Image (cartoon, rainbow, N blue to C red; front, top):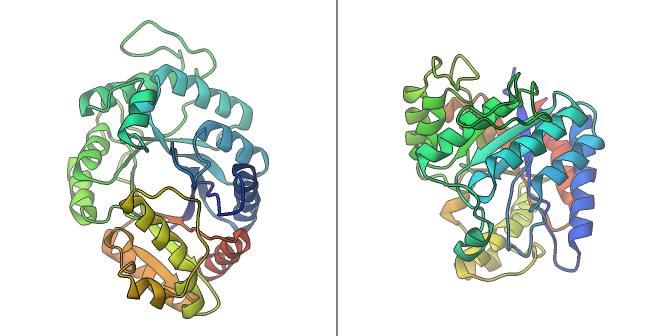
Length: 329
């Protein structure tokens, strides 16, 4: 059987549309993903970004869980330095109370934004030891008594919810933390591929099932990959220029909404194709994408894949999700 397939959504906003429309499109995709058999749907936290509406992650999760029935819904992730850990426990405990055992809490140390915005949001430390201690406290708030391990503060709304906690990362630092804590690890190889192989080795070597924070008895890796499936390889390559343009905007400090696809050769002539940050990808018609996904699983030994698909037209993304489900499930 293939490994489970999941979705990372950032509620993108296309040129000419609004955040309201972007969120509505995400919810429509959530219903579709639920029907098609995807394993989980995660929303990633970002701030001060013109083309993304995924700032209030818990609210998106709640809405997506409300319009679906089966699929797990969670954060990929909550950028913990932006938040007070107690507030995160209360929010995700509330989500679990409302929606039952379908909620995941993925935690990252990056701010998910620029330095100025990070300073405006900052509520806890990104230093590895403090990050680990915050996770330990969160587990206490999600435990039977709802009490943090390091302080006598009770969270009644999260008590007994036991929301699964994941560590997100793109480097050996995040991998080491996840391994030492005995937690599942989601690696952001879809935009940070350089340390992929090393980070996975560090995670598996460091994994400690005896840690007081351990939730699993053996390493579990979910690896990120960019995916665009279309009826032909050429159509998929053209649609993939949407994310290629987005990453060029980020690198040039340019703030604009998602741009429509262009001829790949046009980007190539401008030197805008082949961005190394996007080299972990499966782009093409179904046979090509299936082969690339299988090769990525073989390379990484991933227990699960989480896919990211950007499209200017939401119907293109929905078509890709359908084609992907047909070739994988």
